[in-house]
Image (cartoon, rainbow over all chains, first blue to last red; front, top):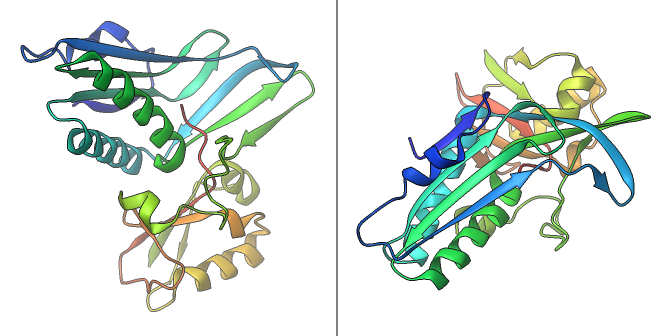
Length: 154
Length: 77
């Protein structure tokens, strides 16, 4: 169970422990947390929702993509759902590889892919309202309004 | 019957987590149009679709028992 959606707070060490391997010379851990201010606007709390069975499949797909791109990599990802307060942990990504550069690169790849293909949404709650947040990739990844075939099956 | 799963703003607009519909033989685009009208759903043009938990194109034809999901732009992480 290296890829999970969790309704409970994430135990970061438990995610890291899943990628421990004798061949590894490095483990990188990304911890995504709930930020209070976005462009000066104050968030009170967030609610994350997932299409859970598909989200788990897509996290597994990201893990497989990483193993193809970086030899010897092990990957574990847990994403939280439900109501999260400021500073709470939304996602933990752990990657181990034989050499450190690969561990950094592969971990970065994982978070960017999550923002492209994993069916998870966040609803921002502010003092004056609430809104489901759409694609936050500042790269404008989908000029056609959706991922291209190559994005989905890379 | 087919189960049509809704998420994020679509779920709020429809007031339901899913809709049951006879969609066999219809395309994904047909179903989009149908439910957009019936439930006043917005921004469906930027919504991705999935059949049985895998991304699907608009012209794919729905089979008996398929589970359809409409997936607004994602914002995990």
